[in-house]
Image (cartoon, rainbow, N blue to C red; front, side, top):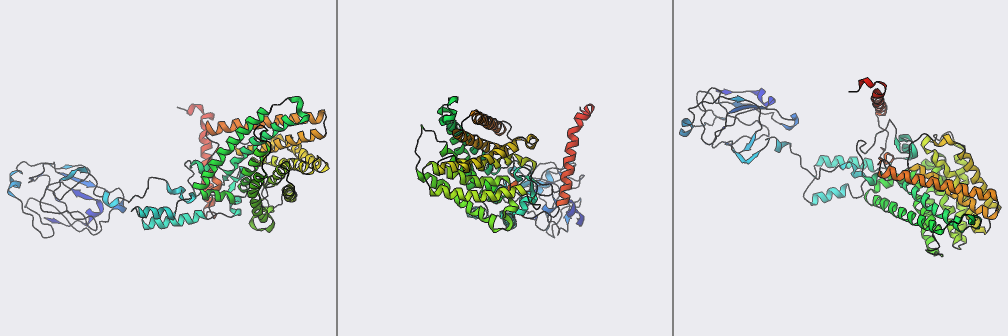
Length: 584
């Protein structure tokens, strides 16, 4: 009996495992397998296999995995005898009639289809789904997460070409999609996008209306989470080495009897810290250069590219006398060369206008690009150089004046600085503190020019210190290190001033500011170690480098969903507290 069932192809496959000889199963491409099976009440003739006969309905896991659209017939064996397949007769053998005397009742259940030959014998005992070969996708190192590839140095087209050379070609559609995705992510966003998409401390928090190009639901690789602002720790610790060296060698502080051993220990700690952070960030440059590139275009992070070289200048200034007394002048030129190159780029953007004009990107972290001039002038004058220190002092003075006025007036076009950025306001104190010492070393005396700069620094220090509420109410972060080296610079400048004007007031002020600076650095160093190695929250995902080039079209809906999700989390968190009886 021949039955044409068009509906069977859309439902699945009716299967009854029997053994046959000389027949080949039809391919799955374009047609359904031809399947044989006896009615439950009829005897079965079998020779090579003695399996219970079953009828199974196997549903595919996905409708896209089947392409059975041309199936027209499913044929069954009835009591009349053999069945034909497309007109080809199937003749039973004598042995079939002998072994078919005991009828077997058919069972209806679902089971996996055995992969075998045309007679139903499994090949080498392996059981697999016949659709597995059709649904299997070629793997090209698919086990690793490729969402971070656009930020890697050695990824992209080069990696795909190497995969092709190894004989693992990518699918054309996947390759085209990856190319488009990489092209979108490799484009550095404009300055306006950083201000529009980010908020929070150092513009490192994604707004509710934005999306990240990197996954937000998993922890990123450590190098991607390691920011350039980490060099602020080097500034704080290395400046302490300068402070304790000054306390040990200054005549006005001789009553403290400070040993140079403290300076030696702090200098070794700062050197080890500097080497560690420099090595980690150098690895980031090698493996995630796109992330470094985005940090350089960040309106705030770009100023921290001065920090490594300023920290090196601090290390030379705080060099213990037991290590060496005279430092070769070539070191000064080597350290000031990258600072000079960065200044040509940054100051040129301030002056030429455009998206990175100073009135648009001005923030307290810009003082880092100014302080390097005065620190370099101080070190050069200490080495006996003349023209070079005066040159950098003049450049720093001119741009500090412009930056000071710009930050004070805060044009209406500038956005209000976030609350978490307020610790960075102590950078206002850094430039005049170092400038007064640099000019005193250049001129050879703590004259009126040096005293004017010193008094400006003291007034800014006092105006910030009295605003206690200005620096409370936010979580610990690397931005707190902005407190440290400006406070240390003010303490060292006060010690230098006490050498010219020696009295109880200046000596007491020197001791007090030194104690505050040391306590602040110690507390921050301990807190940093706790958050880094115990709480493991010092380096969260660096969202500031993962913003999109353009604003997403569905930003309003996204903001609504995020706010709703945040409200639900707040409600869930408050339920156990407000309703203890609801707890199980």
